[in-house]
Image (tube, rainbow, N blue to C red; front, side, top):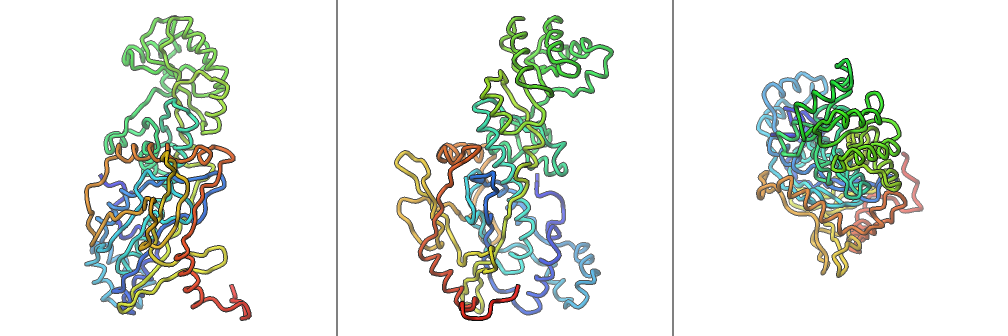
Length: 460
């Protein structure tokens, strides 16, 4: 099942990508090969690392990329393209992605300015893809990173992603379920994620179930009668403590209870006492309701007897860092067979020229120590190059890893990331260096475009 959102992949772009494509075509530049790299310019203040996610949907997008006759007719009628050579639309009719892609595997921790994706293709193909690539990779990476923080805060307790109803649309909810599972959540409430992706799904009942009965006892009894030892009983519709007592007094079979509101610390303590005293020390307590890594950490620091956490809004929206300043920059172009490195020198928005590689270093214990951002043809002994080839001539170079493979990679990689870098507050900064060759190339490119200090400053 495709998860890149909808049909019409070629139209899932900003208009200016297509106006540039038309201009590339009319000037003959569309035949020139260019390389673009996607990275995050800087980490949000509340993040010390990012967990890469979304590559599989990017691969699907490239495989499906193209234009139908109906889509081309729509573009022809848009006033922006009134003066465009009609041959451009014939070009679009046959357009497919034919380039190569290098990427950092999903489930890998990454840092600011490190390219997670490199695309080399005829310039129009690479350009049109910008909008989709940024949207897909930065969203899933945001959610995966947030989920990794929440799972860490839970300290071995299970976390279930509950957020589709709070996501920015159902498709975002599905992608969030995927990214959360990669980062270590035990599952999701999203049934489509179970069907399409194999993510374990979990659910209990809503307060409307309880309120649909004349008494709370009737609601608990009927639910337990249907689901038996699998039943997780929602007991806080009226009063959590009384709800726990009623469940025990009725002698119902159930797996556990859910608390969705109020003082979760005190109510979980009281409910635990009631369950233990009633001969149900095996019954689990599930907590939900406006949870995040900070609230979960605070609850567990105070020994709240909660076994599982359901996290919704904060997770699927990554509420404290809801977006990443992702950028997709051209780093070189081949003009008439001559390769020209490119860079941007705008104030606070400098990009680095040339195809690059991220080299990761570890200590003898396997713990990551630092990264080196260098040129793709450099070699640093005792380092692991992170960017790998995944597509060539528009075709995948091998089968995609399973979601479980990606999840396992994420767990292994996070285990190698220094503890102080993963701290939820006041985290240490992971060191990312830039190679001498990269800095030298930057200066050479800069000298072509940036005036000497004595010159008149460029107007902005």
